[in-house]
Every structure is written in C-alpha cells, then in structure tokens.
Length: 391
Ligand SMILES: Nc1ncnc2c1ncn2[C@@H]1O[C@H](COP(=O)(O)OP(=O)(O)O)[C@@H](O)[C@H]1O
Ligand SMILES: [Mg+2]
Image 1 (spheres, protein in one colour):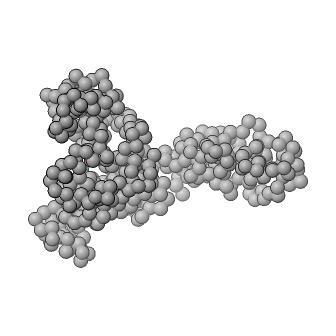
Image 2 (image 1 turned 60 degrees about the horizontal axis):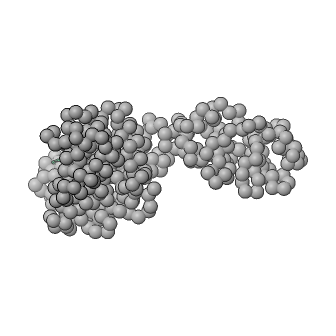
Image 3 (image 1 turned 180 degrees about the vertical axis):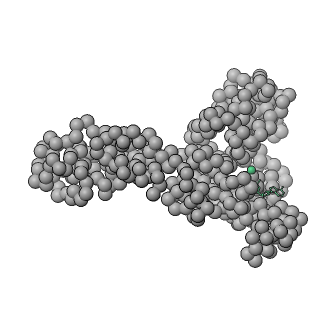
C-alpha cells in the first residue's frame, strides 16, 4: 500500500501558453481572471498556481472537465511542457532545474507516460513495441527483450509478442502501451486518459488490471481522467481541477464529506457512494445499544435502540438481544438465552455496495466487526438509506 513519503511535490506551478507569459503572470498576480487575460492579451492560462504532493505507491487521479488543464498538468510533471513558474520536486530533486541530458534520463527511468491513443508502431511486433522505449535508451537487445516480455506477461500478453498491433483489439493494444511504459520500470507511471478510448467493459477490466498492478508492484501512478466513476474506483486520492486550478485534493471520502466549494459538491452529487464507502466508515455506535457482559451485566442505556449488542471484555460481539424481551436486572445467561439466533454481521472493510442485501434483509441493525474481532457499531436500514442518498 502507500506509505506517507511524498515522491513528487508540485509547488505554485503555472503554465501560460502564448508569447507574453510575463504579462499574463503579472495580470494573474493582480487578480485578473483567466478569461480577462485571454480577452486582453490572447494568452491562455493552462495551469494556475497548482500545488499538491503525490505519495509513494498511490494511484493519484487528476480529474476535471475537458479543458480544465489536466493534460497540461501531467505534461508539466515531466517537462514535456515547460512550466512558466513554480517548482516540481521528484524525490526531493527540483526537475525544473535539470539540463537536457538529465531531463531525458528522468523521462526514461523515472516517469513513463501512457497516452490515450495507443501510439504503437504498426510495422513493429508487439514485442518490439513493448521494447521500444528501452531501445531508445540504448539497452542491448537481449536485455530489452527480457524486460519487454516480463512487462507483456504482467499485462496478460505474454503469448502475443510476435503479433502485430493491427491483429489486436483496442484493449489489447492499450495493454501493449502499458507494457511499453512498465518495461522501463519507472518510478512513476503517468497515464493521460489512457482508458478513455476503450469500450466500457474493456475499460472496466483495465481499471481492475491497473489496481492489481499497483498493489503487486507498489508503483506510483498518476492517472488523468474526466470520468468521476473511474476516478473514484481507482484513485487512492483525487485532485480536482477546474479552469487551470487544483481546487481540492483528497480521498474520495474526504472530498465527498467535505467538498471545497459548490462546484465540487455539484460534481459529486450523482456519485454512488456505496462503491467507495466501507461499512466501518458509516457504522454508528449510537444507533446500537452495547451491553457489556464481562462477568456480570454492566449497566446499559437502551436510549432509542430496539436491540442490544452483547460485548465481552475484549469488545467481541457475543450476541444480539431484542431489548423489549429483556430488562436491566437480567443476568448474562438470561440475556444470552434471548439472543437472536444465528445473527449476521459484516466486516468494517466490506464495501457498502456488498452489504446492502444483508442490511436490507436483517430484522435488526447489522453489527459491524473489525478484522481484529472488535465490535465497531451497527448499520441500520435508515443509516444505509441516508448514506446512499448522501444526506
Ligand atoms: N499548446 C497549447 N497552446 C495554447 N493553449 C493550449 C495548449 N495546450 C492546451 N491549451 C489550453 O490550455 C487549457 C487546458 O488544456 P488541457 O490541459 O489540454 O485540458 P484537459 O486535458 O483538462 O482537457 C485549455 O484552455 C487549452 O485550450
Ligand atoms: Mg487532456
């Protein structure tokens, strides 16, 4: 998984397209808008005061509508586009200061890019295409074929090395593009709408593949997308861009529960939260009455609950009792004899979408249990409904 080390730090980065970047920068400092600047000077502000950091081993998604500056942003990261201002640090080294040779080295070894159009050479075999980046880097034939084959195997194309691009489906062609980037074994994989041209089913499959690759290899991936479902599915964290600015960075859950402004809030309105919230994120202690039974029955407060959750000294769930059938003077045995038979429970790391049925079918709020066995709370039908309608 991710560790908390920042591998890439972007600070106050700007990109002005046009022949008068200094004029545009001065106007930005004076508070003029992107549109005003374009109207008065014809300069386009592509990226505006962007700052964020990417952690080692995470999938970091940059999301925004078309024209919001995503492609410009990702090309600034490896200086395919030169920043007008700001710093970009890779492992603590400012890459905006690198000379041509060092920069080329960074692009070959540290940051490989996968594009939306597969950019395969039609006259080269799949193997040669996958090895192409290594060939440019001057790696000898035997070694580059070994690495290309390994990368092709990682994306499930180990058997197709001698095929040609036109013999492959779109999804397979994009796998070759991915293999070419992986063969470089880059520190960071940059993917600009890499799956946008694929059919929905193939796209879904590739997203799963990417999640698997990142888990297995602990690779850092920066993934550009204009699709919120995709961003939420694959992103550990998401940066939202609008009009050249990065307006919010966070986990899907953080952004949902605390949108930076109305724009972000509207953007996330239609999102199916059950796809990324986990049971533990919403399990609520108040809606279930816990009754401790270490040795004797400890005093408990039924509040508005209809069910009591019997917990031992280690907070492990021993049973669920309907509170209308017991009272505070009952001993442990009496309580246990009243328990709901064969109750259901769910794990705190289960996705909400996978527990809907259980919650809907149970006659009691379903207890949520951490992997270490501790009771974390309950999910009632009401809570589930509230969550799904994000109120
Ligand atoms: N080479 C360029 N010259 C002038 N304007 C550009 C250039 N590249 C991008 N832009 C402008 O910068 C803004 C951001 O574009 P882009 O980064 O491609 O957005 P996205 O990838 O989010 O669709 C747009 O207004 C676009 O027209
Ligand atoms: Mg783009």
